[in-house]
Image (cartoon, rainbow, N blue to C red; front, side, top):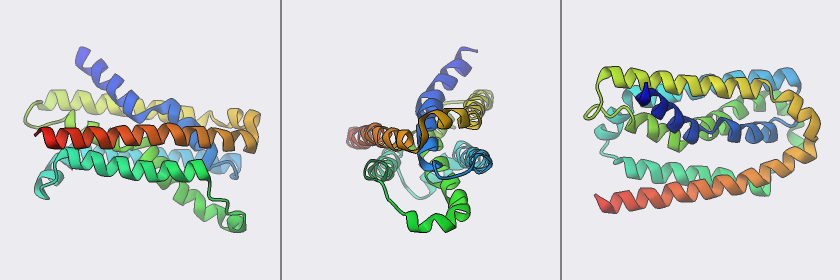
Length: 202
């Protein structure tokens, strides 16, 4: 039970369900209520598939191509940082309003599923916490169930985000987006620095 709780807390920290909410509100500010719900379901489904892939096959994949976990962490941090910059400075594309339905599907995948929910840290956690050289199948199953529990919390939060959106509106979403962008940039920088430290410590 202690191992499950530890895995749950770890995944809760790296997936950050609460932190995903302002990102969701910011990138779906122009969508209708039913579109936001559809985006939430698709984003969590895609993120679940990605994290399960890394949980089951991530270690084999990285070993097969000779990529150390530290390098993966640095690459993930860079991608997260680039996304954070788009949140801070904004994209301003009103001329693309007519493409909003197609953008809804794209938004569900990027940036919500990746890198907000299935973040570089979450992918890394899925690989590290199911290390085949350290953990048996029972521990790996507990880790998987803890990860799924956190993803379930993410889904509930996103599906109940509509009433929050009604209160803050577009202006509030814009402010939250930029503040969250600064936080994500800091997290991304930390991932890069830790990856570099681990790479040279080996």
